[in-house]
Image (cartoon, rainbow, N blue to C red):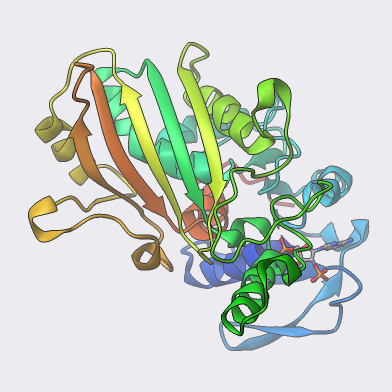
Length: 350
Ligand code: A2P
């Protein structure tokens, strides 16, 4: 074969921009790359491996001749255009939450459940960023000792809410440092673009990501709960999440507490994680060595450290899990899914 025609939908966005970079670094055989965004961006150019590619306006016909379409332009765009892409013979890897919980749509973290790709019917969903990194860290432990319960608190970067949220953090931080009072920072996006009230993110911590849903958990928290059970194919895992936005541009951090089926000692968990795919173990308290958001930025791996036994629960473990939310949490996981589809011969070529 000569290579795939790949489309990036949302090519100007926080994730789309990184998808282009990940494609540049990918081993996926490429024939042509097509960059799609709204009419506002049509005509702009982006560099791809030395060529200037012109951004085109997304229309249904954009997908003629496309083999793989990577979507990250919001759920509404995916709902409308992913079926158009599939109709024209493309495989869609969708980074939004539009199809994640659909029965017929595999929800995939390649290190954990690549086999689920075999059942795809044209659309594959990329999980929520905070879920992906937690899955990469927990799957090796689950395989060795089983997993009964997860309690996670996240410390999430603003880039997870898109380029405009990053701009909001920049603007508010500059204004605050220049002496603007907090009540004059005029937040417009965070904590959730679609909610009624907005609060400053600069120098703050907001315990709301996405809007509130059932039982006073937010949608982001429900995503972590439901997606974990789907990816691990286990509805019995007990899981609760508290998702918090913090004033960091990139890199999500998570405090994760788990209870395993079998008691497993910390040294054994460290040995497992040291050789687990996609994981970097960074855990040496004597050297103050532990994962940090700033160090994870630009890397594809998930960093795990601060491993400790719970002081009261025999099968309880604590850890700190960090990854670049725009890469493993989004763009890299999507491109990695495309690479895995290729390796498993599951891309339908027109
Ligand atoms: P555009 O820049 O032309 O608006 P982010 O997640 O960083 O906010 O990025 C959203 C991405 O989705 C951008 O690339 C944006 O393109 C794209 N997008 C938004 N609305 C549309 C639309 N109606 N058609 C195609 N792409 C869209």
